[in-house]
Length: 443
Picture 1: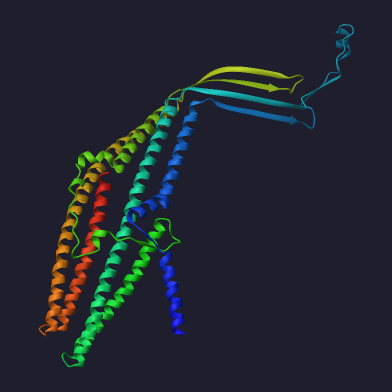
Picture 2 (picture 1 turned 60 degrees about the vertical axis):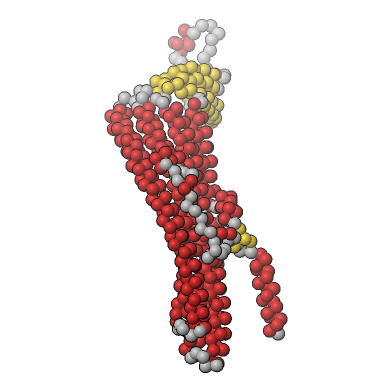
């Protein structure tokens, strides 16, 4: 029965492994671009700004309106009694008779259509269209920022998963060492070569490693779930492909410092999406200032209208051509202050662009310093692996010949594990810092 149960568990595990999809970093980035919610939202904002720009363009065309109305009354609107005195009736020409009463307007139809073409609106239509164009460009720049953030988050999740997998491999290697060491020490205790305390130390250390393995497995599962949700694969079990130059820690070749990545930060400023967005903010504030002036300028328009009614007897139509000028005289009382307020907002936007531009250059300097620092830490961590590996080998040999204690051997194992973990962390940090620098300089 136990064999059958084991077989079922084994088949289930095989099925789970087979269903798990493994992705490279580039594949994950592509999936994130296609499926991430924030990018879909940014794309939707671009479409909204395009529609707003099209709406602004329609202001160039005439404003056309139509009105239609039908009515019926429960009695005539106009009623009059025309019974004239006998003296007046005798004064009428022969054969002419007047009605005794008059009833007018009981039902009818009224309709009107008009078209007004703006001729001069104080520049509000022109500047409104320019503002809509700037808004669309700003939405496209925000899309770039969203793409950068999604790419950075993808890379952070990926390297977190990679570091956990590498640490998991290190723990497995240490565990295998301890299993072999436990066998050797058990035999040595059996023949009386060492005391039982050494065996207990090995077993305690093995228990610690097994506990760390369980925690590492849980952490890796969580980060893979987060990564799957981030790239739009929330219903799938995914895994990451390890980079080739990280597989053999002690023998791996350390990547060189990418000097070709270095940019002239002052020249790179204009290429960054953050600075271009600041420029668009200045432009929009300038246009808003022009539009505020336009609100207080005279407006000129020409138009035509046609009305029809059959309220009285017969059908009547009237066509009208007209031109109009609207001068907001009293509007200047408060309008002048509104113009000054918008002018101050425009000046503030220019100062903000200058100040933020300086901060962006500082951000670039710090990002490059972070690249250099992470590379130095990577070199140090790589050298430490070799030293820790040699120290572990020597302690193994010394313990076999009885010239060192078990605690020293276990300490050497811990130092080797820590050195491997530090190199893995340093490698992942170096890769992430390069991406952060590329994004900071608009590459």
